[in-house]
Image 1 (tube, rainbow, N blue to C red):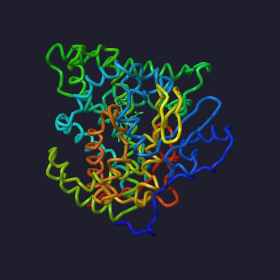
Image 2: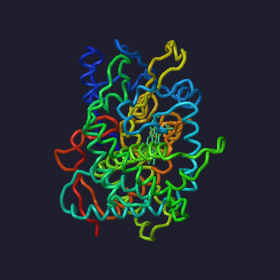
Image 3: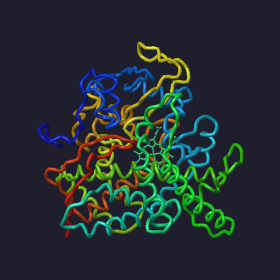
Image 4: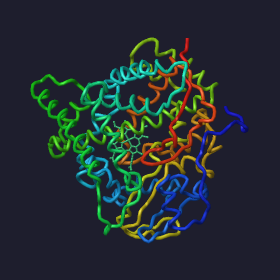
Length: 457
Ligand code: HEM
């Protein structure tokens, strides 16, 4: 366990309690996290009023449960949230609500069930080995690790979904084009969280639309080719085949090409940015706590036995460490819903149409819930407090009906890649370049996450 005087993992500064709206919007644009006051780490609920919207942060386990688990239909996703993503994601499961969303989940969920993870494992293993090989030239020097974890997570998605590696011509083009899309979309970060007022015209920059079109055309090509392989009986048994051949048990429908393209786009977006961010932060934490790193490296010797799914049950420290990193640096720092009807929450009436914000970031570091909330301690999951908080105050993948489809997948991918990297390399801090967390669409570091890399002998 880390002693109380040990260095704490980086945390962004909070803003003063009261600031003008103009200043708030400015801070918000720069970074969602440092735009918030420190009291949110202690509050059960907070209200924000602006001329455009009213929003309520719900930061108490009972309230989070009400929104996510007990009454999800009363708190749909606002169709104005995530607007910046619509040219790319169309009608994807991430953005839909109601019957359309339910139907989509009925078709997608079977592909991600626990039992299927075993089938996906060899593809993840291959991506982990490819990642270790890509890191080799950096041994003995320094590197920005987010770029590498991003590459590795994109590789995992393409290999598990379409049985192709990231070097495949189309996969590489999607990956590159996606970076262009993100750069061309300055309102993406803000619009993902703040619904713009209805009267405000929506401008998608020409290059954003162009980029979205290119990505969708590339994915359409992959999807069409797969449809033909399925018809010919030559399709590989991967996630794309599974999803495209699953019929909705209630209606008998399968996805048509356009709807499948929407889903592939979200698997790519939701599945690679998030995992990449989590893995990069975990590696940085390993650099900050070398004694933990050595324990994980020792545990990772289990990988020498080869690609067998059973090894995952041996990577316990790796899993606890990855969970702890997801607590301290939840890749999705905040989630927004809309109250579909007036709701009573604590002593307040939340009006219909108000925004309801859930903040994994604040809940995971809540000072009234967690023991030593800002400390890195993977052993906490074995304590009474850790177990209670894991159930009630830990939502890196959200919870309830709309829980992340890829949660089980990510909890295999993350610890596997982490252990595989630490089996082959030792990571260390780069003096003067410790990361500062900032939240845009995912929690990233302001100037990347820099590490020194050394090969283990
Ligand atoms: C560490 C990795 C990951 C984290 C932390 C994460 C987190 C989340 C969170 C918090 C949500 C809910 C967002 C909201 O309701 O506003 C979500 C939704 C989703 N995630 Fe993940 N995710 C991860 C990996 C993945 C992977 C690997 C996939 C797919 C291959 C995936 C696919 C999805 C999809 C499709 C949704 C939308 C579900 C719905 O709205 O019904 N995620 N994820």
